[in-house]
Length: 115
Image 1 (cartoon, rainbow, N blue to C red):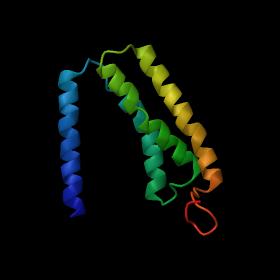
Image 2: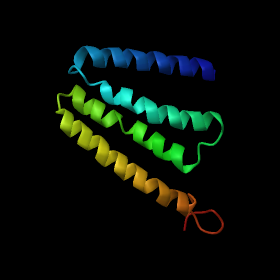
Image 3: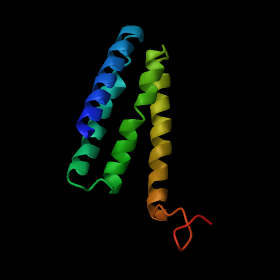
Image 4: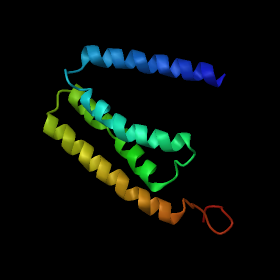
């Protein structure tokens, strides 16, 4: 079942990329190529079951927020705006990860239930 769901998701993603390539402005894809580097780093940690460490968390966050500049570029925004958008979102997400890690992810009281 999981393999079928994954196949459908990959097919849908491929179709959406084709539609974006056809309808979007030229050059919208380069943030995705740049994001492959931190994304591959995060994936390499995940394969070794070490994905809850700081480096893969930060790398994954930087890779995931690459979607925003890709959308901006596809809509016709300038490259400088897309880079600024990526930097702001990457800084925002990477600055929150150490704080969330320090808090231990606890959302409840001593018994684990919300206060």
